[in-house]
Amino acid sequence: MHESDPFKSEPSRPGLHDRYVHARMNSLRLTNRQQEVVELLMQGLSNREIADRLLIEVDTVKVHLRDIFNRLNVHRRTALVAKILELRPLP
Image 1 (tube, helix red, strand yellow):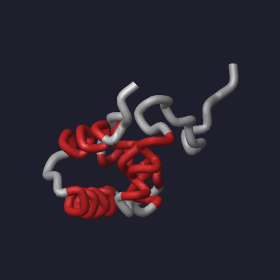
Image 2 (tube, one colour):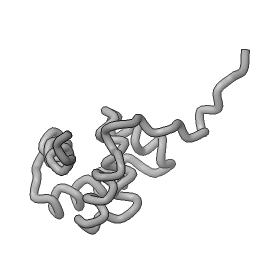
Image 3 (tube, one colour):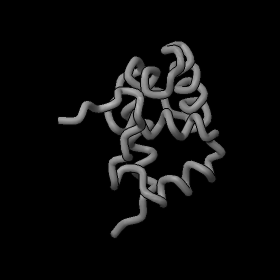
């Protein structure tokens, strides 16, 4: 049995952050790091888990989230996810 490397990046979950969401996040002028934080948040990760995955401090995650919330005019994680999901085109 082969051991998994805890520092190896896992592939993204398909669906939640598809090309349309990426394009929209780019149009919202989110930085690459902010986009990474949003993607991990949308996977249900906590601030600690996001920090561990990105190899940054929890306080840095909080700063990124504060900046994202201000830019998108939302006040909660759930509102952020809802706003990003609104951006997806209907099938």
